[in-house]
Length: 310
Figure (cartoon, rainbow, N blue to C red):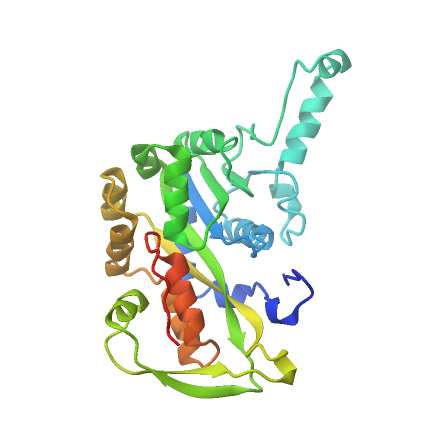
């Protein structure tokens, strides 16, 4: 999947399954899909198209033989590469319903099927975009013994959790239904033609938000050249994180624990965050400290303090 927002080469990115499906994410996906009921959120910012990501997750579930039937909103699974006979989409539901509904009933609008009303015979439900309209049905499916995978627009797992809490309005219901969150974002890639080494001394607050021990930080960044149109970057890299809602996090959600404390709790239990993924790219010389600070600020669910590392 390649993103072309304004045909600007600096904004291009690819969804790379081989980068996504590595430890610990592979184990997280196996555990989340192995639960067989509940709700999994797939969080992406607005500029990331989650269509291909949901397709990938559907393929993953099929290849693991976790599920035999699917129900999906229109257009989510156009490019599945596995055997199609095991996939039952909403198109199938609509077609089957149309065969048994009389023309008179259709004209009278006495029978209504919409993307909100998913098939009740499916083991797994995919929802490309969770909204206030389809949210009750998604949670109903999750609490009714099926697994619902729903896309939501947010910069990371904990901002997504905050949005879901506001959308549902019940910490107890969120705690009961939510199994996990898969969060994705993108990081600008350093231009390989103008990369230089830099050193900075962050403030104490910046160390805290960046998740680093006090020390001089050494990294690389692009200074800008003709090949990158003087931006210092060339393309983007998708990064990801996986939040598994265990008993301690679930209790924290139910008790109204602040989102930042929930993130610290999950981190202490071994969660690798988007910030960790961004630091890996810095260590590899592929991303700048500016990108790390951007990810730190965007994914902090309760921070309104922008980082300034210049």
